[in-house]
Image (cartoon, rainbow over all chains, first blue to last red; front, side, top):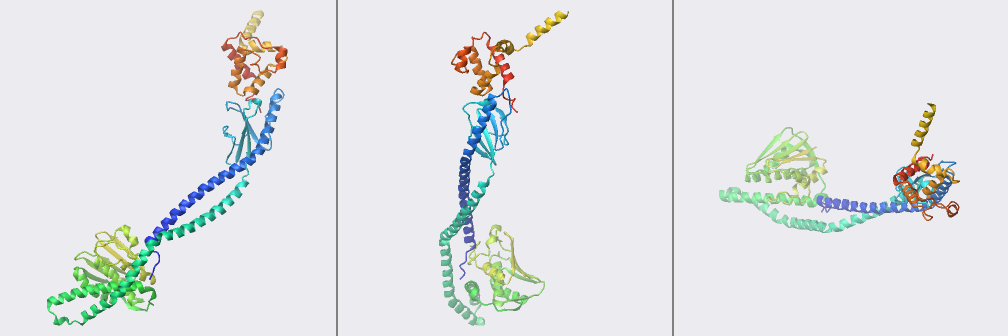
Length: 389
Length: 109
């Protein structure tokens, strides 16, 4: 039996993995930002030694200019750094800075690729209460940090994803076990149904309808319909259980004849709901398929069209050059449910019997033969299922 | 006539001379230490224009050995300045002119 992940299980798994991945990514991102910040701080502390030297040199030069103000007023410059001086009111006295925006309350900081170091000299040469030294950061250290981050964070993220996948499998185990239990139950039930259904069908066929009075004939007809429905259900369940083990025996089939045969088969069931079965053959077609499988496909579509139809409604099967269309005048399917109609055990109408496997079987057969299924449905107007090739 | 014009020009010149020139620079001219050097010492100690002007004002209003920014040998040699007879407004105006004349800010290149 097929125990692959169902649609809802896959959806739950996807949602969980997505949420888990997002959470893991956010945590890793936060750690990466903190690490980057730490590395930047570490780099600044290393540069501070050099910047202290530059600041000392600048203050010495400022002192020289201050002492010799009547000889020169040329602000000292250096190839190694740029600088600026501010008075105690934080008013700029002179600047050669590349980045003019200075935060005098911070001692050492980096803005983009510019590092500023602020020192307060003991004597305010030229009025310099704040001395700012600026250097350009080549950011070579960043390459190493990014490399480390991508390696470690990437590996960790991958490991977390794997853990997340196994965690999700663990969480989904109860759901999986419930599905498996249901499938085992259906398997056992199907097996047990085989003998009684065969016995009922055989005995009904053996009954001589001519020998029966009208009342008994009606009762027998009802039993026949009930048996037919049961038999149909049994066939579906058997197909579901054995599909992967049955080898297709493809042959050229006349679709017109086959559709007419299946409509006849369902005539009695349709009569109970006073549903009229119509067949429009625009072009007779033959198709290379396994007879049992195309019969199952048609049976499920026609059976659904009758089952979910209104009293005195109609079902129209149209055969065209490239399609079979089964249209009913039933209650329709809600738009939000359309995506899940092919899922196993998915039912949107509990007023009618069934296991929710009919359209799943249709889908399995269509996939096997490369047929496209298109469903259009409007609530309280009806459903149109098109099988195209 | 020429005499009258000369006297008028001299009078106008005296009137147009700033408070600083009249009340401060004139006396300091004979001093061995140039007047700008005092401001540079104030800047070295007080940094900003506001702080320098406040310190100068305080000292000029109440000159003491402790309040002076000059080194002790200088004080021993030249002594402490006498109390100013100028009003606060005149002092402020003189200090403003003094700052404008010798300030560092805006003169560096």
